Image (tube, rainbow, N blue to C red; front, top):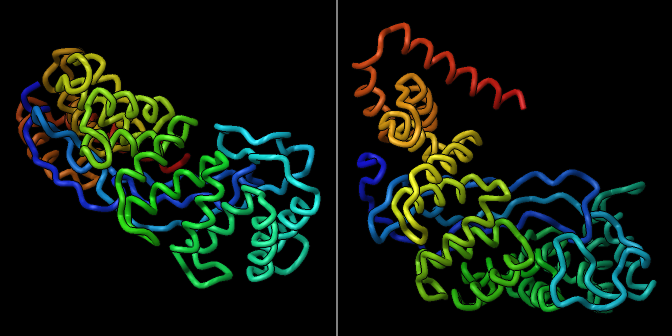
Length: 347
């Protein structure tokens, strides 16, 4: 797969490799379905013996959906060393829960006008009583500047309190602050420690970011086998960039034994989610015909989809294989590409 493995050198920026994801206000649960944070395509689609694709850094802070109120019955009886996302983290007095839930109501405007200042005050009171979800929310509103002036240092204080109680969203946000140097001196070692704790609880973005730190050697010793492990965790949960990067690992034999069939499988998973670099690589797989039957119509389809998303190399590859296709075959490939796009738009 010579074309698949052309070398590109990558230099990581200083910010969080997969983006500063501040995607959810409250951790015990959401009334509304949470939209997935946007995934940034991998920086490149090809690797050399010592370079792997990673997502470029971003410091965008996304608006979020509110969370569900909690009751004493839903709060675990004791603090837990590791909790799944959206769980309350320790036994909380009825007073703290009542204040917290009132804050949720103010924030959402449920049955009353939205009042962010009142929500912040409720979150603060509950946070000072030790409720981890309220500590997380207070940190979050300081990150967003909702109801209070944006203050990353204050956000770090409250996120740390929630993170130390095992709240996975707080752990991930705290890692993001350390990685970006927001409210605290930039510290990739601390970022790696917190993002690992979140990844070990199954947080998809945390697993992806931890893998990327192992690729770059930021905050941890560079270890491509560990990177592959964490990319796999994120990939198995459907993160397209992780699937694409895992495909590159298998294609190049980095961090895992080389396995072109496995590479093609992961490229397909990412490509079917619309990941441009994976679409390019899957087109190359069909062009080469080493692990799947050679199919230039299928190759042209995937390259067309990659080109439509701005892939810089797809047009050249399409031109090359078009010389081997009839006009009818090209028309069929374009029809299939358009059908794929239309299906995605309708979902």
